Every structure is written in C-alpha cells, then in structure tokens.
Image (cartoon, rainbow, N blue to C red; front, top):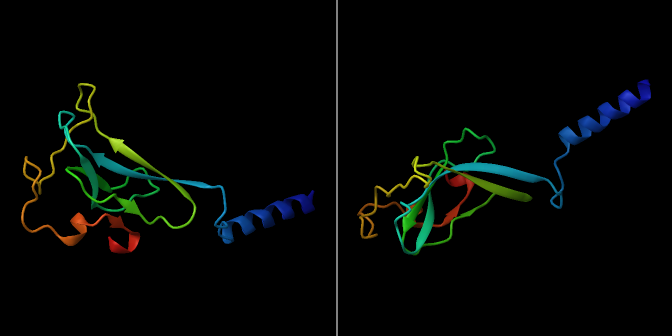
Length: 129
C-alpha cells in the first residue's frame, strides 16, 4: 500500500515540475471579450486587440474589437501547443450581438488621426502588452 501511494505522489510531482512536451495533446482555452460591429453593418471587417491579452481566466480584461474595412489578420503568439480562443459576445437583448462602433473610426470607416502603430498592426504577443 505504501509503495502505491509513494509511486502516485512521485508521478504527481513529475507532472507538476516537468513542462508538457511540444507534441502534447493538451488544449489550452483562452478568453477575450469581443466587441462586434452592429449587426446592421455590411462590408469587410477585421479585428484588433484594444486591451489586455487573452487569458486562461474567464474574468479577463482582454478586449478584441471588430473594425470596418479590410485589415491585417489578428494573430496571437500563444507559444507551443493547441489553443482555443473563446470570444465572449454581449447580447443587445433582442437576440442580436450588441454592436460597438469603434471610437477611433468615423462612420464611413476612415480612421481618426493619432492612431498608434499597434492599433493597426495585426501581430500580437504577450510581450507587447
């Protein structure tokens, strides 16, 4: 009985202190709030990271916002492994996602002056924010 308990404890410690291999089948789930354009908007869309970074905690402050027009594809550097990004979408109470119009874009889709470079860049990594 003692050998079985000791062996189990050793296995638990090995799992805790040895990081998983790159080919591990573990799936990591990360979360972000997603602010969509109003459901009445028609046309091309792209996404930008406007706050934080997708987290493994559900109470994240990360916000990804949809912008009108073409733009770079939003890419995250989550490191190795398989990651699923879950978007939290708020409802408008009428069976549509709540629509957000970006503060730094005019209604015709043209950007306001003074955008920072990372507002336009599509590559996002944890070291940048």
